[in-house]
Image (cartoon, rainbow over all chains, first blue to last red; front, side, top):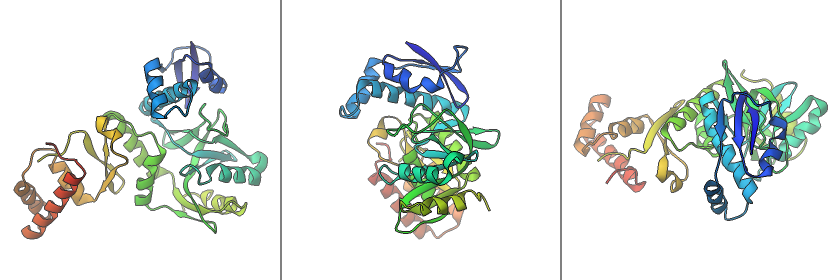
Length: 237
Length: 88
C-alpha cells in the first residue's frame, strides 16, 4: 500500500504494510504527485526493529519507526532533521523543550498551554522536524506525536530551545556551548554514514549559532512557564 | 599507529567531537570530545605515524618543550588505545 505525505515541505511517497502507518499520517497526506523521494521498508527490517526492542513494540509500530528513521535521514538532504523535543507555539513563535524521558517535557508543555490558552498549541510533542530555510530554523509537525499524541500539521519559526532539568526553583540561563554539545546528540538521530553525519553536524553547528539554547531548571508549577517564556521570548539580547 | 577510518573529527562551534560510524556504532554509546590540540593530533593520526613523528609535528606547530610534548602525546595515544580507536 502507498500514501503520499508532506513533511517539512517535502513530498514523500511512503510504501507500507500496516494500517497504523496510514492512521498516524492521516493529517499529512497530499494528492499524489511527483514525490521528492520514496521510502519503503521490508519484513526483515521490521523484525530487526522488533527484536532490538525486545518485543516491547508491535510490528505496526516497528514499521512506523523504521519508516520514520528513513524519512528523517533522507530529509537531511533537504536541510531538515528530526529532534526529540516538544515544540509549542505561542503567537506564531516556536519554543522547543528537550529532556530525557521522564523529566517532564510533557508536563512543562501543558503548563504553557494552560498559561496561554488559545494563543498556544503544540506543533509536535515528541519528534518535530527542524528545518533550515533561507537563514531561519523552523519546527514542523510530523505524524510521530509520541504517546500523548500531541501535535498538528503546522510549522513555526523556532525562537528558542531549552534543555529541561528538574529543580526546586525555576531558573533559566543560556546553556554553555560545551553543555549543549554534550547533550544534543542524545536528542537527535545520529546518522551512521559519513556523508549524513557531516551534514547533521553542519546543521547542528548552524542551529547552535542561530537559535538560542537555554538550560531551564524547573518545577511543575505554573510559574515554570512564566520564567521560561519571559526569557525565551526575548530571544538573543 | 593510525586511527580507525570509521572515526572522524567534526567541529561544532569551538568543540571538536568524534562520533563513531558504521559497524562500531552499536558498541559505542556516545561520542568523545577533544580540545584543539587533541583534534590536531587526531588529524595527524589519520595517517600512519610513529610517536617520534607526532612529537616532531607538534613541536613545529606549538613550540613547546620536547619532553613535555612527548609525555602529552603519550597520554593522548594511551587514551586512544584505551578506547580502541587505533587500528591493529
